Length: 168
Image (cartoon, rainbow, N blue to C red):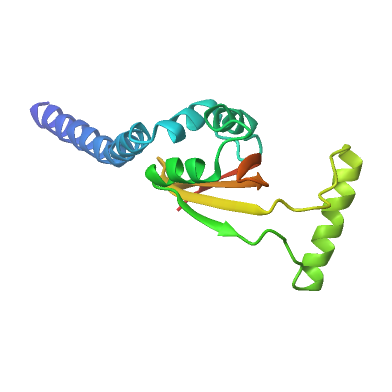
């Protein structure tokens, strides 16, 4: 009977340690992720509005537009996001299709815009800035991609946001 109690305690203790060792990396990743976002107020606000669905980024986009309303100066938006760790670069103002697949994609995009009743993109904004950041997540990472379109005078005219969960 005594050996049964000892073996039961050893097995129970082993299972407790194994469970703790499984939970510890997830708790560490969660802590690291929360610390990262606390240091980036704009990104934190967008993350809190976003529900984790890569296809539904409009709540996070609304937060971004509240922080950088239409008409915001291009340099101000890029500087604020760069301060949070985003890498920002100016893109060509036009999106030329370099191959037949790109041309087909542009044609399909025009068809979808027409079906949805969206404005046709007949003239690209003179300035486009793309900002990207790879942020830690509990399982893998999250890629934040923001495209700013600026009108004449370097004023914000539109924003596109994409968020991708990357699982390792």
